[in-house]
Each structure stands twice: as C-alpha cells, then as structure tokens.
Image (cartoon, rainbow, N blue to C red; front, side, top):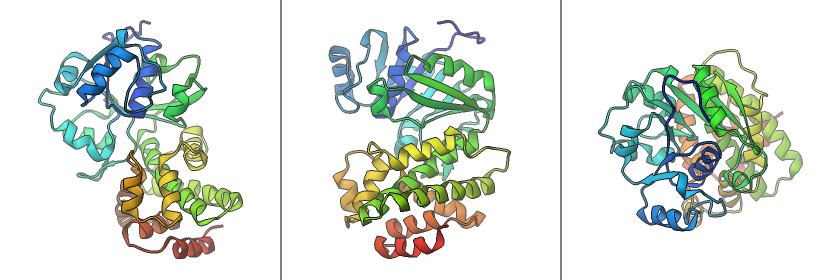
Length: 335
C-alpha cells in the first residue's frame, strides 16, 4: 500500500508487550515489512518459529515473514523513519538511553499511556524536550481499544493525534483494516493526558467494585470522572475540545468497565483489601495507573483543578489511607 509521503514510511514498533504486539498485528495487515524491537531474544526466536508472542497476547497470530525482529534498538533508529514506541512509561527512559544514533528527522508516535517518571512529562513532551523533536513530528495513538480484542479481530476504534494531520492520516491508513477503524485529532496534549488519566479512573472503578459498590455508583463515578478529566486537562492546556468524543469518553468507559482492564483489576484487588505491594506482585503486568496517579497528583498540586477522584486514589495508593474510608468520603463529593 503506497502512501504519498516524501519518503516511503518504514515503520518500526518498539516494545514486546500486549499493546505492541497488537499494533504490529494491525500494521502487518497492510505492510510487507514491519520493524519490531524487543529486548527478549527468546521471544524473537519463538515468534520466528511459532507465529505468536510467547509472553504477551499469545492468541494473536503474527506473520513472521513480514517482521524484521531484533533486540538492537539502534538498528531500527538507523533503518526506519516512523518509530512507534509502546514501552511502558516506567521503563521508557532506560530503553531510550540505549539509543546512540540521532533521532533527527524521525516521526515519533507514542502508544504509551502515562508519564515518564524521571522527568514528569507526558511522552510527547518528553521526546520534544529531551530529544528536540519538533511537535509536528510527534503523534499519539490511543484507544478505546484493548489488545485482547484486537487479537480476536473484534471491531476496535483508535484515535491518532498529531499537530500535522497528514502524518496522522498516513499512519491511520496503515493501521486500518476490516476490524480497525481510526479517527484523526490535532489535540495531542489533551489526547495524551486523557489516556493517562483514564487509567487512574479505572483504578477508582476497580476499588469501588472491590469495596462492593454497585453499577449505579459506577456510572456516577464515571460521569464525574469525565468532568474531572475536563477540568484537569483544561488547566494543563487550554484549547477547544469536545471531551465527549470517543478518544476521551470511549477510552474511559472501556477501561472503567471492561474486565480486560489491568488498572481496574489492580483497583479491584486494593478494594478487596490487598496491599499495594501484594496487588502489584500478584499481577504480572504493570498497572500504568499506579504511576500516573502520583504524576497527576504532582501536576495538579501546581494547577489546582478540583479532582476528588484522583485525590482519593492517591490517598489510598501513596498515603496508606483505607480505601473504604476514602470512598465513603468520595460519595459525598460526587454529584
């Protein structure tokens, strides 16, 4: 499939987890060659022989003949021009520190939800400030979408945000297929913060469920969460945006209500009385919302938006407060 860009886009995906695997699957529907960086030699060898990722999203059938696999990150920076990062934000800096080749002129898309803990920046800002990548060369890929549903080829929707709409359109054409539909947005900052905040609200939904609150409270929690998100994002970056469109609201609902959501699962365990440490050990995957809660709390200390849900989750996860008491108080603050 040819795309009218100055150069033919050579796309590489960085990360070996579920979401990276799902994005690789989408791209190989349209491209003959997709670069794929992951750290695990074992996984690389397994994919070549068995058509699936042994560690994550093993149900997704892959096409190894279309994959250029390696654990050398600089090889992909040298040979590819559109780089999609899908490494959990907590580990991103460690991986980026291995890059010795210049990122100049590269188009960077982030499918990472969260903040780089070392710098406190969302991913796009991190690339812009640390690597001086111009904002028009940075994009974001967000849901409402679950890797598990992509593996089953169930109809899923993605939003691609970039200041330069042409780049978002270019990538969306390469991601779309019979089961993936895409939308384009120019609100990269709002889209990225929404993706991060929704993981916190998913933890809140999980805690509420674990504590025994029913569907009625869940819907009140979610409708308050979307308004809280609006207040938070407005303080960070003021622009005209419709918070009800699917990048914001849909993503939040999928994460808050779906059983596939690891953040919700994590919250559910906390609500049922697990300590933060034991809940994390029980889960093999990182709950991004755990880190996001701390970052959002710190950002909002400067900005001062009214965020009772984030505050309650922060108190439970970081201040050792009882979930039961915090949510009891929260019920009086929601409307």
